[in-house]
Image (cartoon, rainbow, N blue to C red; front, side, top):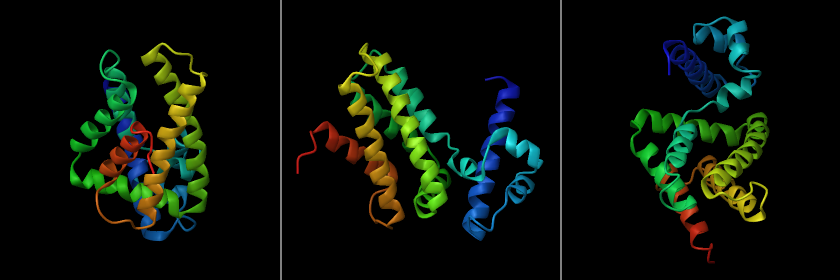
Length: 192
């Protein structure tokens, strides 16, 4: 990544961090895009170059793109689900505690604010399509094959279920451990 791309990524991340902080402190409705832009030290027009809405600024993350990159790097390695779980463990295992807490807080917020939850559901639909493409690339199967689409939907369903549990205040293991466990249950055939 060149210097220009690094600066863009840093600006995008800072806008997202400030959006999360302000919404957490003042509430979703009370926080304006102008306030977020000022806190991130950018103009309102710069805010909108990066994000079309306030909700999109909260959704920004770099965690799953990193997981996805590790998952795709294993194209000649373990089976799909195993490679995905390994990517999750690697990325979350390498995060500082402050970054992990920010990720947990963002996930809690996404499920507790109705406007954010609606945007998140749209993002999950996009995630299914991205996973279908990745699964097709990794396995040579057609992205629209039922097995591929159901696998992608099940993974996103596990992600949604674990994230919703954070909003409910579930105690115990952290997000990455819970997600790994949920995907492990899918691998086992989800015995009840």
